[in-house]
Amino acid sequence: MSSIIKVDQIQLADGSTPTAGDLGLNTTGAVLQVVQNAYEGTTSVTSGSYVDTNLTASITPTSSSSTIYVFTSLGWAINGTMGVSAKLLSQIGGGGYSDLQVYENVMAYVDNTKATFSPVYKHTPSTTSQVDYKFQVKVFTGSGTWRINNNTPNQSTITLMEIAG
Image (cartoon, rainbow, N blue to C red):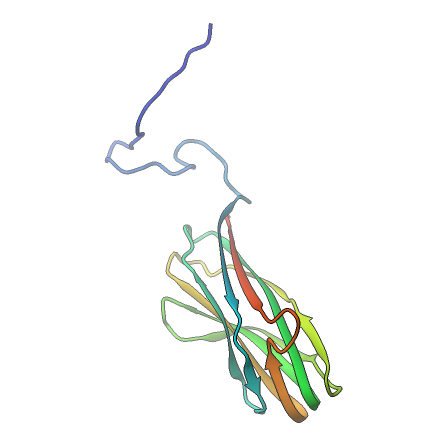
């Protein structure tokens, strides 16, 4: 004979809701949440200084021990002959952006080149405050125009995945 226990809610002695750890469950490595943002507009860059691409996303980690994986698919095209660099930035709790990763000389060279740039970055922000991510690009050599989403398909995405630590 088996027993079944049915309850509507489990609470700790102080009335709060228990976490998986409180219940003796190991969640390390589990996917806690996924956030994806798609950008379908076109952003043109001709500058030798970093410029926002409008490819952004935000996540609020559920634990300060979590790791955030940033998956990006950035479709681009150029008109001209140039080299383009990109960088991933983040800010925690609106405190101002700082560089996470710089990708030197990753796009372009020949006129009418079209491709997709798809880096993956592992970030451990050690916070439960909102973390904002964005991509910027710059032309570092040559001249012409670099365009996000002047490619097929005309959509770039940034996906954030929180993994329990």
